[in-house]
Structures are given as structure tokens and as C-alpha cells.
Image 1 (cartoon, rainbow, N blue to C red):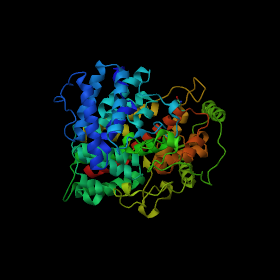
Image 2 (cartoon, rainbow, N blue to C red; image 1 turned 135 degrees about the vertical axis):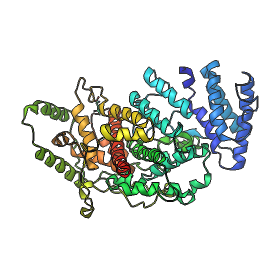
Image 3 (cartoon, helix red, strand yellow; image 1 turned 90 degrees about the vertical axis):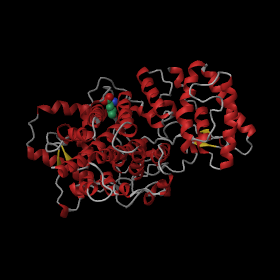
Image 4 (cartoon, protein in one colour; image 1 turned 120 degrees about the horizontal axis):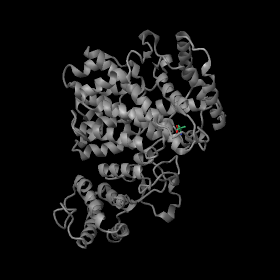
Length: 553
Ligand SMILES: CC(C)C[C@H](N)C(=O)O
């Protein structure tokens, strides 16, 4: 199996890219002809691959057939021929394309690697020697015919990656109430809320592969009313989930173009999944996939500096720290010290319920005073805006919600994931509750007992503080938690970072990523981003499912 995996060689990606993305019809036809000739003569040497229908395996310009049949065929073939041979063949094909198709530009991958924030050398490659990771990578590759940058970076935490991939496959590819193109369209509507070009492009592509109507990709007004009806819920959940109530749910399930309860449940979960995934993607500075902006047709020699390539879309290259941010970043040692003090002070008298409430409110109010970087680093793109309604609607601090609306704090003892939301989700869309439960548990509990270079540390207080702080920003209170810990463990700069990744991921810059959590390893920063992603997802789902529950009872 290990060898199969190495097919994630950039040459194979480039071939796929050539196949799917030659924009001019002529260039595309020429590229295809060349790839076909080269591939055919190559395959001749090995006999016809299974299920390929004979020699002309690239007959027909069906890209889906290419991705779904050819690439697995290549995978299968690679079992029987040595890796180097496969690589060389790929290179030959590219050279041949270059030589025989004058005017056809042959793209190559940019060298920056899967993330713009993390040096490629710090990220495990596709053919990692870590066995657990390797298994999940293979799984992901077989599902997607590529190892997405997203999965490669998540690979820092293989257990989490595994749970994540399972849920995402279930949501998008398994049996379920929603038609497949719908699922991807909803995914891109959700991702567009944060201008996440990475996801919008990925799911626009998937949407077409699933037989979706290309017209819909021109913008929301070309999509069916039923999908457009989701906009309001999508907007609210993305930015101010506390505003969601049973009337919104009722609107979706009554009248024309209605959603069945189970369809709606799948839609709501896809929405929350993709909102929060934007946080991960932008928080980790993921680079676009090779066929979606992550390549160049310039000569390697002429530029010399791949990294500076214009990513054309994603936000967040460069950018200044916000003036209100507290600049001094505290050290790992002082964080360790504060964690220690916390454990030592447990013999203090138990604070009263009133005192606990006060502490929660203090954190909530302080959070609303934290200003995040104020504007996006690039202007919003038409490519994304066409899937957005009401683009000025963004996160607004819970503490500053309109008093007239009378929205109380969400008390977790009244409605929690474990006791309430979990079973409702399972009931309306079987198994999803279990899958999400796994994800939340891993995200909440995962630890390696390390902090930077320090070993054997109990990091639970720090990790809890992150999780509960995020819920606090969404007005969710865990009444048995002492929010004083949030202030003891999360210094202001880190709070700003968390708030930005969580609520305004489109504004995160490389500088922000580098300027925070000094002394932490990249895997730990990714760990924090992963917790932000999951805590946010849970917060959204709590509001969504509570509203569904109110509607049903
Ligand atoms: C987020 C990190 C500080 C987590 C830490 N490395 C742990 O293993 O728990």
C-alpha cells in the first residue's frame, strides 16, 4: 500500500490538472490528445488496465471518468510497476505535452507546500513513515483521488483526522436525505460566508462532478428556491447563531419548496461543518490545491520565488497587527507557571453560583472589548460573493446584542450536546450524532502531555479554557466551569487570535499566526485551531438543534 500512496506525486497532479483545467477548447483538446497518446503507449507496455475499456482510456472528455476511473486505475497499475518508473512516465508525459503541443502551457505545483503559514519541511509528507497517519492518508487519497492540503495538515493529529474524514464522507458521500449536488452547493454557500476560496472552489468542482447544474454556479439567483431559502439560516448560524429560533425552522419546513426534517438536519450540519472548517483552513493558512490556484505556468528559472506567487484569492498575505492588540506575548514558562498556580490553588473555597456567573459575565464583556483586525486583506471576490446574501452581516459580540431582543445566555445545563442535541441529531439523520460525538470528544480530550519542548504536562486546564472561551463568545455558559481560569490562562493576544480565527477567519494573517503562542510547535498551533473549529461547530449546532427541538415540541 505504501507505494500506491506515493502516486501523490506532483506530476500526477499536474496531469490531472491538465486534463481538467485547460481553459481554451483547443488547448484542452491538444493537451488531451497528447496525454492520451503518451498514456496509451505507456499502458501498452503493461497491458490494458482493468475496467478501462481497452487502449483508448482517455476517450471522451468526461472529467469525472478521468478522476473516478483513470486515477484509481493508475493507482492499481502502480502496484505492479516500480514507483520510479511511474514517476518517470509522468514526467515523460509532461515533457511530451510540452514538446508536441506548442502553445499548451504545462503547469507545475508551487513549492510552498500545503500551508502558507507552516514551512513544508515541518509537515509530514504523503508517504510519511508514521503508520497511523499513513493509513488515514491512504483512506483520504482513495476517497478524493488526492491528498488534500487540508488533510495533510490535519495529519498532525491522525486520530482527529480520521474522525473528521469519516464525518465529512458521511455528510457528503454516503446515503442521506439530500441529493449529492445539493450537499456541495450548501457547502459552498457556507464557505462563502467567510470568503473561503479554498472551499468554494473545491466544492464547486465536486458539485459538477456529482452532476450538478453548472448554471447554479453562476450565483445564488440561478439556484433553486429551495436552496436559496437556506440563506437566512446560513447567515445567522455563521455569525450570530443565538438569533436562530423556531420560526426560522418553521419557515423552511412549511409552504412551498419545503425541507423535510431530515433533509434540513443534514443541511444544518453541513452548514455548521463548513463554517467551522473555514476557521481551520484560514487559521492554518492552507494553500490552494494544485488545480485550484496552487500552480504556475511560469518557468521555474524565470521566477525563482514560488512562494511569492499570487494566490489570487485567499486573503491573508502579510498585514499589520491591530493597534489595540497587546503586543507583548507571554512566554511558555509563564503560562506553565500560571497552570501550576491554578492546580495548587484548588483548595481555595468553592466560589458561589453567583460568583461563577459574575466571572462568566466578566469574560464575556472583556471579550467584546477585544477588537480583531478590522478589515480583510483582500477585497471580496465576485467568485465568492455570488453565493452570499447580506455580506455585511458578520459576527457581533454576544455581550453587545440588541437588548430589545431579550436573548438570554444559553445555559448548557438546559440544553447540552450530550444530553439533548446528540440524540436529536441521530434521530433525524441516523448515525450523524455518533460521528460528531467522536469528533467532539477527540477534539476536547486530545493531548500529548506536551507544551512546546516541555513534556509530561497536564494541559487540560489550558485546553478547557480555549473551548469554554469560544462557547462564551457565542453566549453559551457551562455553569460548573470557573471562567476565572480563562483569564488566568489565555492572555489577551491569544484571546484576540482565538476570536479572529473563530469569528473572522478571513482576517487572519501569517503575522497573526506567527505572533501568537510563542514556543508552541506548529502541531500545537494546529491543535489549537482544531479545537477552535470543533468548539465553534458545537456551539452552532447547539443553537441549531435547540431551535429544531423547539419547533418540534
Ligand atoms: C494545544 C497544545 C498546547 C496541547 C498540548 N500539546 C497537549 O498535548 O495537550
